[in-house]
Length: 382
Ligand SMILES: Cc1cc2nc3c(=O)[nH]c(=O)nc-3n(C[C@H](O)[C@H](O)[C@H](O)COP(=O)(O)OP(=O)(O)OC[C@H]3O[C@@H](n4cnc5c(N)ncnc54)[C@H](O)[C@@H]3O)c2cc1C
Image 1 (cartoon, protein in one colour):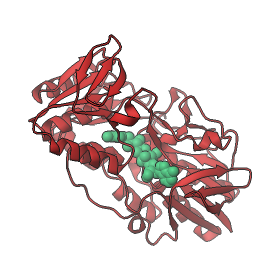
Image 2 (cartoon, helix red, strand yellow):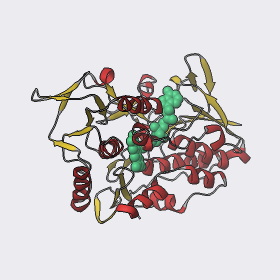
Image 3 (cartoon, helix red, strand yellow):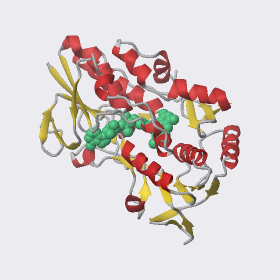
Image 4 (cartoon, protein in one colour):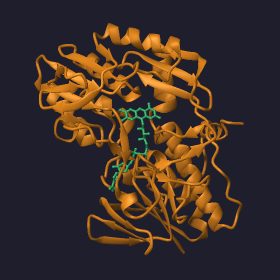
């Protein structure tokens, strides 16, 4: 019997848990999944929650039913890799032989005032809090800090859902700067259509209860500030002595084992995964393949098979622009933009079918199958 413990029931933790359970159940694998909440949080739809939309409700117990995985509800509060133990809710001790760490990331709170005054996307409840706040406002200003894909998706979603509010997007660089020129121009047009005021070159140094302060001292009024400008790993891994990078993500080898503690695998946003083009950045697109790869590496190791190195290449940057528009920038494996992009209803349909719900993937995984698209992603560099 090998006790395999998975921490975190987000996109990657569930994928890893189902995959490792199906691969090891006939070979003595006993899989336990620790989840902070009984419901699955669709993190990549939290901007929809913030805009007041009610999403489908998925119980984690239902998602993993029939797999033999034990579900433990609780919050991981400490790891002890020397003893091969994890502490849940400050007291319950769970032992393991192999661990898959999939706890994602949290908002980087290092800018003064973010912790006290900004809304963030760390969990479902926080997005709901923002939705409530916006529902209270008849008029006023919502500031979205951060011009990455999450900031743009949020600004457009909130502007569309609340035409009575002024939405200001504050960005150091040009919003959506990773996209190609044409796709980015499309994004600019969509934001202008929705009346979003975009401020490039804006460096927020402080969040106040009713404003944000820029580095030149200017105050931008704000009735609600959403912070999307950076995430980092939980402090748990560093506190336990695992090697982490500058963003507290666990540094892993090519099989996704911690370089300091090889019985610990790390996947998804929580892992610093190096590829020939650099360290992967946090997406479901890359995260789910890392979860599956770690599960396969773990199973192959237990079965005495050769463990392969992960090779991952990006294919797209999917971006919703409210519920009525979207743009998909297709990319080279290193995430630089190709010439092709999709817009409008084709882009909406693409995003909804290809990149927005992991449930069909989980159903296939339960049957021992890996979706063809995921095979391609992990073979994207070939
Ligand atoms: C608004 C928004 C839009 C996005 N859009 C896209 C997109 O279009 N495409 C894309 O590919 N990516 C997108 N992303 C990024 C994507 O959501 C993340 O890359 C993805 O969620 C990473 O999956 P994960 O499993 O590593 O982490 P998560 O999905 O964050 O899962 C981590 C899990 O660990 C749990 N957890 C955390 N701490 C503890 C603890 N102490 N104890 C127990 N459990 C704990 C959390 O509750 C959560 O369930 C978006 C993100 C946001 C915020």
